[in-house]
Image 1 (cartoon, rainbow, N blue to C red):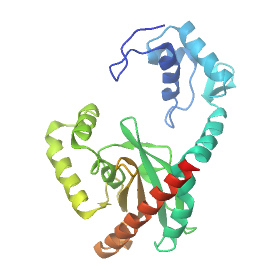
Image 2 (image 1 turned 180 degrees about the vertical axis):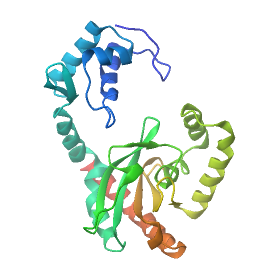
Image 3 (image 1 turned 90 degrees about the horizontal axis):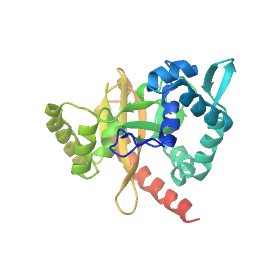
Amino acid sequence: MSNAPARDGRHETSSDKTLSVMDLFTPERPEWTVDEAAAALGQSGSTVYRYFRSLTAVGLIFSIRPGRYLLGPGIVRYDRQLRLSDPLLRAAEPTILDLARHVRGPGLIFISRIHRNHVMTVHEHRLDAEPFAAGTFDRGRLAPLFSGAPALSMLAFMEVRAVRAMFKKSGNEEADWLLIKRRMRAIRDLGFAIGRDDPDLGVIHVSVPVRQDSGAVVASLNVAGASAAYDDTEAERVGTMLMEASARLAERARTQADA
């Protein structure tokens, strides 16, 4: 077993390295060979072949043609299990359906969580049948942690020292920290975050944190729409509704967890 240090400072195990193979598969590079992966990971071909064999055995990758691999159907099984077991996701749909009756479309209502050093949407609901591009916060896409209302609405209500540590770990410029602190303070004062054309041009995001009884932030509840359709009054109206919906969502999630 390897004792090489991992990126978070702990020692990286063989299991860590096996799972690191999964990070190679991206929309920009969905297909890999063992040799290509070995070069990217700095490991021997025989070692990476063992990783591929283990991941293939559980269906997380599969060979689409000899020697070339894609992410496998086993991932869908775990995605289904997540939807069925996560109390927040189980509580999401009734809360979002209530909210959708009072929010104009086209657009999206979605839930995001912090994942590693990013923000990731884990559930989304489309408003109206008219297409609306999710953009940066498309479900499953890794979005920047310090950009956009869905991220900042969570960070603003977290312990400042923890956020500062995350800021440094994400490799941001130190000079930007004071700007982030001011934005977080304004969000706390208002109770919700509004991001117009940030980070997606032509899109407005209105976001609130979802918090447990302890006050811990577990997610953000968000509405995305066309910037032109939301003046400041409408954005604030949606923000107020989101705060009320977030409280209902947290209560429903708590009930789901206790069931």
